[in-house]
Length: 488
Image 1 (cartoon, rainbow, N blue to C red):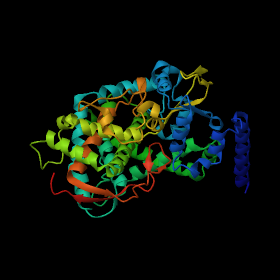
Image 2 (cartoon, one colour):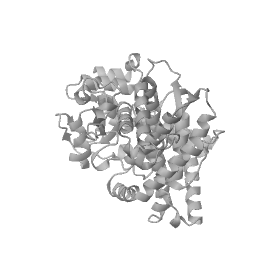
Image 3 (spheres, helix red, strand yellow):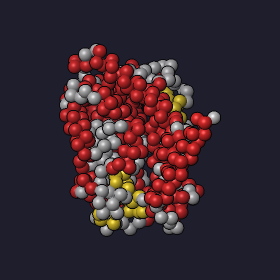
Image 4 (spheres, one colour):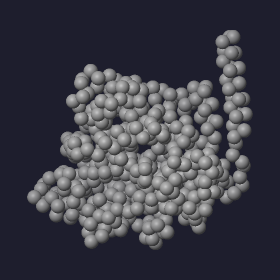
């Protein structure tokens, strides 16, 4: 009885102290239209997704920047501001302690949660490894093998059956990134579609970590974490499972002479002895290489279903490039690089539906953005690629159209300024895995487009509704029915 009373008093004390701390830091109550719309969720009466509401507000703003005062958040879709944050004044806009507090339990000291010397160290190592010809060839072979031996057979076994393509793509990308990153095959895409403890634990941990960032006050999740209840208890349990599995992978690597293995973890282990840091690197690899690719491909196929002309163009281009391989589904790395229309279509798709819809930094010192917006020290500053893809001021009056041709010049793909298209970030933090992810997306998309006709089982006017998360995930998945093509 005394023990129960002690813990009850302790819990109440923690709660009172947390409330006092919260009140001392509370953002001022605000009656502006934006803040009231956020607090009362009235935006949901007109918009399916929070990102669509933000896009609407940013379009209306003359500067392309808005304030959500109750969140202490400045949100921008202004390319000049993005360049200023990611390049010109990079040092004043780190991820920040607030970000690492929210995601640190999952990401630890991984590259996506740190700044300063730890970030520079990991980025330098990752840059050297991901830039090598051998690692790119290794990654391409893994993806091709997974397509040929698992993805295509699975889809063939489900002809004329409605299946969730998003789930299939998430399984595919999870298998691929696990093989590439640490030489482990979870087998998520086997014909029986088995469950994977690592996949399920990682998904749950990612979801619950992202939900922390959505609360009006961090007090809510911090109290739950302190008391080990609710979603924080589930998060702790999920992360513990991820930790155990990551530790097993590292132990097995050390037993099996990692010095001769080609996966990324083995390469990092040649220079790092800290197993906790290696665990954090594993989680970062999973986050970067799994969810983003699956997310980008899901919305790409949704767009293709609305635009059969684009499918015809991709098939025609592949037939020209793969002229001696009419019956072959998979293209070589060199052939993939020659398919400019396919490259344009992928980039156009993730312009409209970026896997990471927004990204935030925290201002170190008082500053003024190029559009004249004052930013106080400690303010969260968010640039919004999802909204930027819908800005007439950036992409013209046809910005809402799915139009791969906007990326072509005389039939050749031409990239855009990374600060008006920050899907892969830009400046010093530009995504190191960009080329690998684009090649993977092109390989999967081409294989399916050449092998199958498909029909999305959603109302034509129904647009994707996204679930809260670190990456964009379509609520309810992407129900699709496939039919093998007679001619390729």
